[in-house]
Image 1: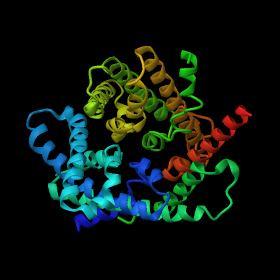
Image 2: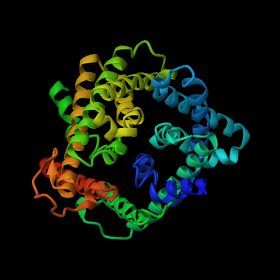
Image 3: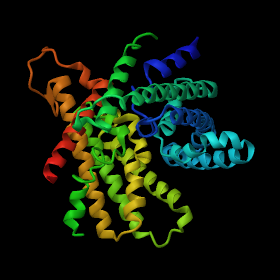
Amino acid sequence: MEYLVIIIAAIFVNNIVLNQFLGICPFLGVSSKVSTSVGMSGAVVFVMTIATLVTFLLHEYLLVPLGLDYMRTITFILVIAALVQMVEIVLKKVSPSLYQALGVFLPLITTNCAILGVAILALGFEDATLIKALVFAIANAAGFGLALIVFASMREYLDLIDVPEGMKGVPMSLLIAGLLSLAFMGFTGIV
Amino acid sequence: MTQWKNFVKGIVSENPVFVMLLGMCPVLGVTSTAMNGLGMGVATMFVLVMSNIVVSSIKTLVPDKVRIPTFIVIIATFVTIVEMVLEAFLPSLYEQLGIFIPLIVVNCLILGRAEAFASKNNLVSSVVDGLGMGVGFTLALTALGAVREMLGNGSIFDIAFVPEGASTFILFILPPGAFITLAFLAALFNRMTRAAQN
């Protein structure tokens, strides 16, 4: 039950993109086609889970016992950068087809603030356990994917309509993101 | 290019928020009031200028292949400094900005300037570039925060201008308001720069 609350809260109520504004760069950058947004979501699910797993263990068993909590930001970003590189190399060897699908998105993920953000937020639970942190990471990745894919499918229709000159491009996309965010606010209070 | 032009490009023609769309997460995330926008802008500007100084001074010493990780460590160091200073001296701002302070590390604006400008130019130009981009970023954040605070809360920099209890557009301080306000500000900025060019 506790885990169900975490999952619903992360996907719908506190959606990481539309409510917490993490990962806006890929949200605006790779959302012009549904197919690329699906690839990006897959890569994020993959990296976010592994990154949270590693950073959580590192924080719990290395930084806290040694009193190095203030080094959190530096160590986390380095671990994530190294991890993305490693995932890329391993994936290339082990599963070329998966690499084909996700490969181009992996380098972009290092600067996706959603990954670092979730790794830090996952430490914030009271009586945080590894399983709770992992459930939180996967749910947030799913929330990111949901927002990205819905947004991309809305943007595909933009090509068909007549947008006023000044609103073309970014402003119109932002306005649509605002409407989507408004729709997600309807979930407020369900958990 | 004169240093003045170098400075102004960060505010107008290459404005990080309205033109380049860099570092959008804090832009949307912390701008529910003008004060938060200003605080975030200044914190980011500090990290940007300091990392530009260091990157520009060590650019000949760093091997090309480990350039990006080196830049990230430099940036993360200054972010940690900002984090500790804010926590000690401005605890209320630290609470308000929350997760977005450590996330200055992954603000693509800072890594972008280190890679595209500071690693190729001399120290003085890099400092000026950092200041220009920082001021452009701060102005954009403060403007966005001011509009949202005025519409959503009926005040500016915490000074109320509507009577107590009057109803305001709450929507604008909620998350959707961030997207909608930025959309219209970006459209306005586009229009103004285009009018200035013609």
